[in-house]
Image (cartoon, rainbow, N blue to C red):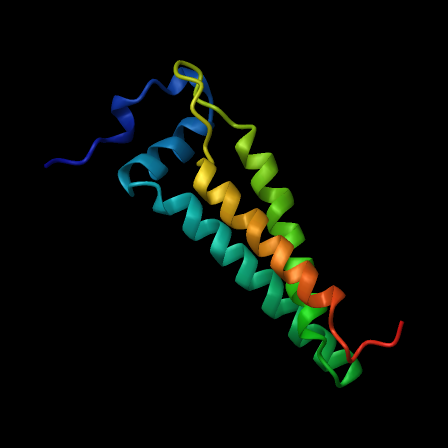
Length: 117
């Protein structure tokens, strides 16, 4: 099976054609991998930055902050749709997974017993 070239797409629909093309030729893994990479980058950069500045990294706070940041990016990317079909860039399954991870990380942060309230 031959890959579809970018030149075969109608480039008059705007720059989002590139995102849809990358997502289509990878079977939907491009956007999922990008969201996962952003989540990991936000999580680790916040954790190690806090650990460097204060000497103690707060993993649960960084986890919930990274999950919320990824949720905001997912909502923004879900607003991007194809012009002809109306299909969103983010699938419903990916959106549900991001919301579940956000809820779990927020509950872990909320029920952490080592925090002084």
